[in-house]
Length: 283
Ligand SMILES: [Zn+2]
Image (tube, rainbow, N blue to C red; front, side):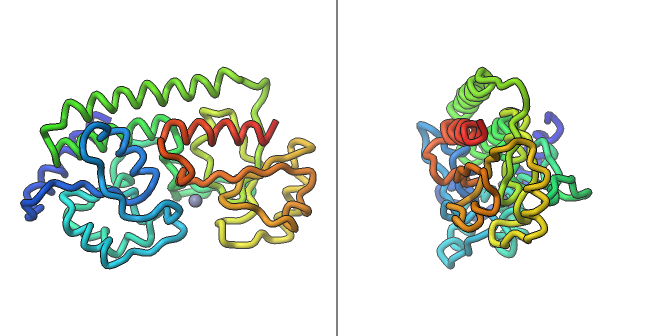
């Protein structure tokens, strides 16, 4: 972490020299979960600008001429990186003021898993913000970035980061206080919740499809039914699942949890309700 922070600082100093625009130092962030984390850091100071709308994270969304101007006018643009935000890659891969979080070795990373839950070598599951430790590390990185853009708020940013870490830790403790005897097995429509599992005792029992827009194969539905670890299962989806689909997986409960937390106004409370609702769906 120390080394990667030093790296981040060095990268920022170079970027500051390159950034020619002398106007107000705007920091832009790519998408909604990152915006929520940035909000936690800048509370009490001007907030970052958000490029993609909620629900545009990763799998969807496109970039408008206005977005391109916002990118050019920003001192720094913070994004996760191409594995998540394909739609931003053309604009940001080579932008001199862009900072990709995936490029820093500061977060815990997990590989993608296939529909049967087997890790796929050499891949990155992009949903890193759902891990509470990663969320805290992201706020620390954002505080460094915001401080370079607006040094006069440096103290405030760092105090906010500490406050965030305390709230996040409390949220995790709260979930863990309702400890169940064993792991809670669940299905996902697409495997988006892996980073929640260790803090919340969830156990992945397979996904329906490789992504949210691809219909599940009959063979996969059969496999899930054969393997079901408990009689009544819970399936976590990004949007309301079709009744016909649920009929093929009975008995099953379902809960809609959007991976980008677009239903929440605050990261920690959004994370908590996501964790609680999934656990409730299972038990
Ligand atoms: Zn996803």
